[in-house]
Length: 319
Length: 284
Image 1 (tube, each protein chain N blue to C red):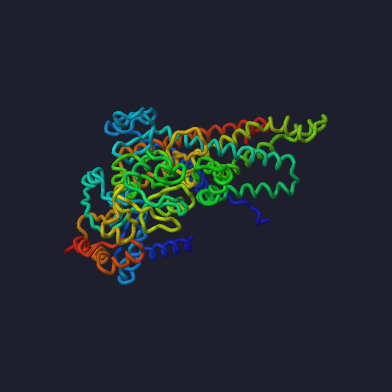
Image 2: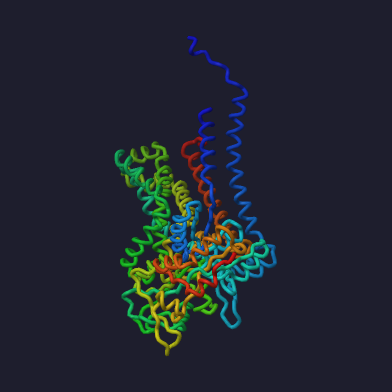
């Protein structure tokens, strides 16, 4: 039995190993914090620097401005101009429009697929469906954007007879394709986590599989499905390449979904590389970055909190 | 463990050996990037000890790189703005400008569009949003779909200054990342109009531009741009930090020589006239 004699592990090596892993974990948290501090530092002059506030203060970015005497006050985003214009409202509306269409497209498809895959599909079908939908998540967003620009735009324009080829619907549908895997995976996880006892009990009481799904499983998994939708929404808000290529990038305020849009993320991607360092334009772009960061951070946190709560509730233990 | 260390040391040594001879970086205008790359290729063929790297990103990006000291040469399709000159002063950079080629800004129309010529005033009206329907300029009754460039583009800035006379673009102008993308969009859209350097046009037709209603409409081409009859033309520049010497001066003088200018003409850029080229040559 000589082989099986345990050697006492070196205390020093264990200590180093533990500290190393601990530092890695803290480094990740520190990285997120430092990124936020950097972005906010570059955006801060909007709040205190007088030169910057001349062109782009908080109220100039939010409210209608009368840019030229004799012209009506309006919202406009035209930073490289004799009179720079920094209204954020057209960009905000554009971002929302794209995200809303993406969710309207992705939620029914994602949740529907999750319901089928977890409640009705045979084991073999489930083994095929789950990886294939998750493959969608592996498509680089620039490829989706390219696809939307070249193919999807023409298809949608011919289908609906639209004036503009690159518009919110085009960008929204392509975004939806990127969001479907997120909604699907989380919703499907939530539904399979519903304890079998609940399903068996309702089946025993005489419900058919549809009634079980609609009345028992969906309500029980609802927080998880909502978390999936919220996380998908966060992804749709922050996605850059797809909207940059497929949306037309025109900063207009309109209620119609068939007009072009310009989103926060696409604005940063298109303009940050060139902007003169230290100019008001530069600070405004970082301010937009801060907004995006906070928004997605909060949405992701809400999603995570909801997920932990339903897991504890359904499974009676902390995962 | 020992093997990993040895491998790492070998890689580091090899890496440091690659960088020998001089390295020239060129960054900037997307309009000029094709020309810059062709020139770089040809120059490196005859000068084996020099490596020239060319990147695009827009005139604004190139100028920002020059001001940050991250590039040797900045390609720009517009002059530097007063704001940028001031920032250069603050950063201790002395921009030295050399004209290397000419360019005409062509207006692209879809081949199925019945409209063929436009005056400068009409172009201004179209792009500022005053004119919104093709029937106002002699075409069909349909909304004009505007395509343009992002605001970091030298082409955007030049068009705004010279055709729009400083006015803003209409908010509904769709912005695309390069002239090739603008051309592609117009070729797919019957009611579209776009602008960009004339070296990029495929599957679209040029609009013949007239200065006013009574003058002749001129199509953009190498001759009409270099002899000045096409009204919307500009110089394309290379900016240096201070007067170029040594390898940089050799490179720019080669681009201004007959050989360099002929190469530009062969890929559809407009060469400088002999006098202009001589005027821009960098003396020692």
